[in-house]
Amino acid sequence: MNAPIRVVSDQDPGGATETLAHQSRSRRVLRELSLAVAIYGMAGWIYVALCSLTAPQTLSLPLTHVLPYLREDTAGVASFIPFVPGLRFLPGNPA
Image (cartoon, rainbow, N blue to C red):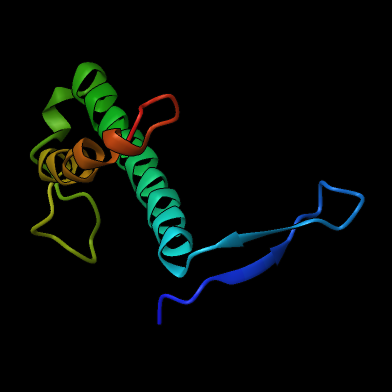
């Protein structure tokens, strides 16, 4: 199951190959997905933070009519939660 797979490098004109383990590929995918979730979570949190600065009276209103129990302030907290673990995968962080 952890047998190495061969990947042809596009950057090497000679067609050299490198060996990658299955685990490292899944780890890269997990890292990229976590980074995307962290970025979107931070964007949602910044949106709610800016709304709270410009129109604080709207924080108690529902975020959408589809989910009336999801208020803006609750959505801000829910957006911030995935951002915190995603900090580990930000570029420049030696994870």
